[in-house]
Structure formats: C-alpha cells, structure tokens
Image (cartoon, rainbow, N blue to C red):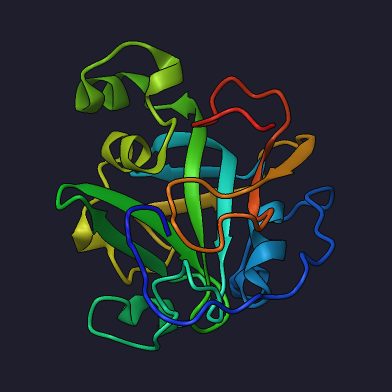
Length: 206
C-alpha cells in the first residue's frame, strides 16, 4: 500500500480474476467478502459519500495477504487490525505521518485502496477542506480524497455500509487496469483499476 515499505521475502500472488462492474446493486457485506482484485474492479463507478460529500469511485488498488506490498503481509498487528475486522470494514492509515488513506476491507487481510473519486456531491465542502476550487484536484489521490471527505483515523474500523459512509449504485464506467503506484514491492502487478479516460484519476493509465 502506498507510503509503506515492507520487508520480507517476495512472493508472487496469483493472476487477477475476472471482474465486472456491469451488474449494479447497493453493495452489502457479501460484495466485499471476496477476492480484493474482483472487488477493486467492481467498485469502479460506485458512488461513495461521507456525511453527504463524495462522488463516483474512478480509481482503486487491490492488496492481498500474500502481497509483499500489503500492510497485512506480516500478519495482524495493532496498526493493521482493521484489515482483519471483516468484510466492508474501513481501514484508515497514515502516510508520511499526516495524510490518511481510506481502504475497503475484503477477505481477512485483504483490502482495496480507494485512490480517486469524480466529485459529484458536497463540492463546496470538499473545496473548503482542500483549499482549492479545482474539481480535478479535490479527490485525485488517496491523501487528497481522504482530506476532501473529512476522513481521519477516527473512521478506522467503521463499517462502510453505515453512516457516516454511504455506498450506492453509480453508473457503469469502462474499466482499465494498470500497475500500482506509490509502492516499492510487487510493483509489476496489474492491480490498479480505473475508469478509462477519466480526468479525475490520480495518474493516467498507460
């Protein structure tokens, strides 16, 4: 996960399973209780809001327990406890001691980092929090996203299926994949997912 350097022998996780965001419904716990790579792909196009502010998810990254870039690679700790709390839990961690990052927990020890949103709700609130009126910079990147949504460590471990969070069907978006960014291990795995052609992603895809 971006911002953390993990040590230990490299392991090669398996191939990405086929995922689709074509069929939509309000996500429940069963939506998250599966392979994080499938969840990361299926989250593209969902609407995420926190206390009414947010937008469409346009970029995600998947992390698995046997993934040397994952915070769970060495097993449960006090810091990563929420990654083992159950599907649909939030996992919020700090990078560089100041920026929060929001993750959706899937199967035990696996999670999806929510990297970018297309802002659609509460734009004035998010602009005030971010100190910019540039809509493309409100939620482009996990640190910016968390700041715009007002996410802090206080939200760590909360359910994404209950207030202050809300996940709803959004719209179907064409899917693109690429390698994850901001990590130093397992950098070649194509486990970053995004909305093809979206101007709101944190970094363009290949």
